[in-house]
Image 1: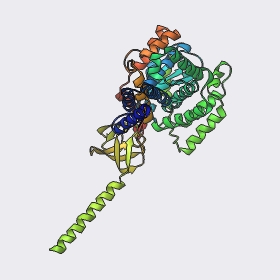
Image 2 (image 1 turned 60 degrees about the vertical axis):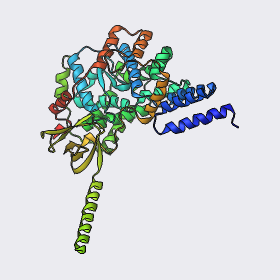
Image 3 (image 1 turned 60 degrees about the horizontal axis):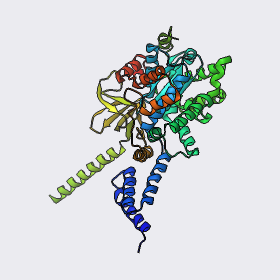
Image 4 (image 1 turned 180 degrees about the horizontal axis):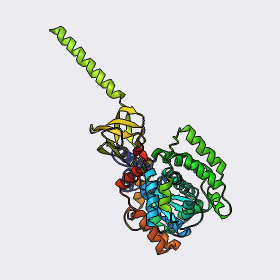
Length: 293
Length: 169
């Protein structure tokens, strides 16, 4: 004779077995929860419900939630970096270069948007879901479109590899938070703010891990090269940054160790056999940016 | 008579096997660009015979340097620029685990926010902006950034003017 708890488990097991082939996991979880409840085992129903929360928290963040997180981080980037620079023609040009590169990147199915930050420092940031920023100071340092394409390619690489989402996922796990994204944001906005503030601190103040930066350097040069830009332009650009002095060196805080970065770019060009096409489009860049910076 | 029938059967069998082998040799690739054009010839000046979408499967007919002759699932044959295809099918949107996570989390979410693609900030982002003291000016800037669309034709025209991508040759 089965006791009540065992009977409940048996019913739940049968429901799981019978629905597994035809429905999604959320439906299975719901069905199992309902079965446990109707068999009079409220405690088991609650456990299944909680299990769903826990598993949901440990699973990767979906695109809809990524958009929410990306937008919230974008708000902080804009606020901390002097707002968006109001130059519609130059913004459209940066978007055309960036979207041209994104068209054949490794995550081409999402929208990428680019904005210029009204800030003299030399920097660029990528928030989840394709919110990408370059500072006015960075654009002043760039000499041609091929350099811009590789810089934007680097930022696109952070999005394709979900680098910030990885940071959020880890911090969430360390803090024992089982949810994030929409459910989390709506039910517990203060906790959502803590998650976003933590990610912003990492992005703007501490900088991402060196491994993530090198991975994005590699992808940046590959993505720009796929469109036909000369990959050696990125090498020239990084070399120019290395010689910067004074306040401009603030960039080094979030993008460290240039010798490592340069050697990564050089080895990517040779290993991937990226063609030196000679396409730099310096004239188009200077026409588009002249008088606007 | 029987002999002729046997011969015919052998010939039919051989043709079938040859056709099957030929089909098996046709490598399958996938469109890896957000959108791509299938052209009647192997230059960007040739007319477009079909518009292709991310993830569409293509059967390779012939490879020639930077261009591939392919056949779509609907049987349309044409040429596509090599950087627009990949050997593995792009994941697209959420991967299976992320979709699973979304399913679980939605059982928890009684109120789902507006889509980030629509004009206006997400409900959750708006609430974050209130808590973090983000000014209206900065909210509007991110809102405009979210809503900013550039038609694919404009991006293609930009690439063409720079002789980039498939317009390089």
